[in-house]
Image (cartoon, rainbow, N blue to C red; front, side):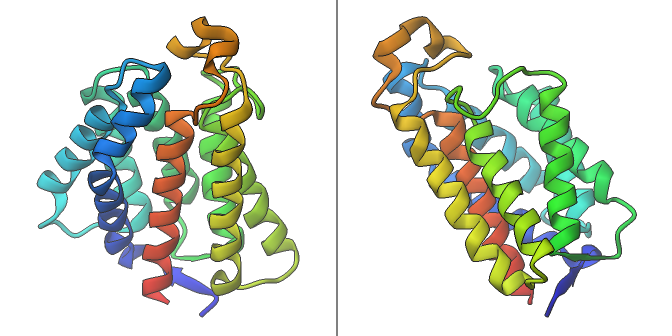
Length: 212
């Protein structure tokens, strides 16, 4: 199939929740190397709150992104809550009127989240943040859409682009957040936000693949 129904997207969100829950400890370990170590705990708190409130409710893909984003924005600690909240709420707004979501629509949805983030954070690719994961993932989807590829072709490519972006942060010097104070000492460690963003995007892709 070349698209999935927005209204049937609940399993995608639950897949994203499980991805974060399963990696709570790992995210804490990564963050603890150059940050304060609470990224896994905070992300798990927000995603689990979403699960508890909405697992028995009916909702679509973009509606779920909005509800999850709202919780992350307002109810978890640290700087990442507002960052992820903004990404997900802006992504949701871009897709709320879509009935069917193909490669192009998914690219537009995630691109809107990236644009929303750029309006509150100046981080660019190369600054050792989640932008290093999200931006190449968006680019990959746009390229797949331009080439006329369907979701079954585009989603594995997006996952690979996200993973490559995540891994690229290891050799970067942090320019934002607590880890930026370390300067050169931040090199050699993955960025926790880039890691969690990759987990979310991979889980999203896997959830969509299961609907096709």
